[in-house]
Length: 208
Image (tube, rainbow, N blue to C red; front, side, top):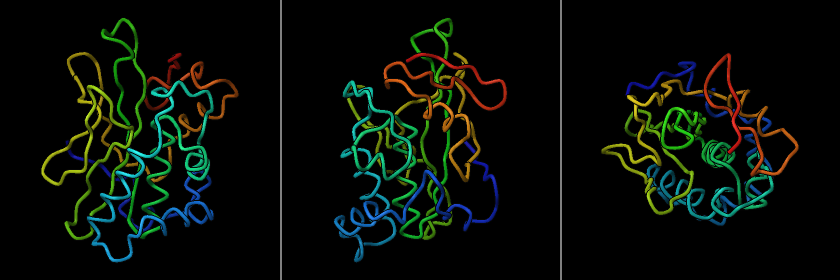
């Protein structure tokens, strides 16, 4: 799939934001603990990605009730939904001067279109040495999901089934999409959180 940048300015994908708060001491301490200073760009991206994928739990996998959103919050509690984990990965990479954006997919909520859809969040990362973007999915692996860092082909958490109405949105967003932030600000347990089902305007919400 041909990815489409929201802006051609790579520096826009380095900005610190309210939910990508990479100046936070916890973000900086974590980067220091990962010992990335002597690594190549690709090694830094891979190690950072695998840290978020493996060391931060997906809330649904651990039956978590806490809803996290800002990168520092996700790191503090070591859990979050896919969107929140994408905020953390962006913060950790942007803090290293690596341009990182946000991507989304519309996926089946169940096994058929009749059960509805849910929006899934992941990242796009710019490889300066390769002069191209790749998508990385830090959702977290489990039986049936085996996302990994790869330069040859994408290994995301989910393969979109176009025939069933699923969508791979091609845009690389500079900031987390507003409907995602809106959903994560709802004050309720994670299990009851109404998640967005699609992008962009007439978005529906579903319980998952």
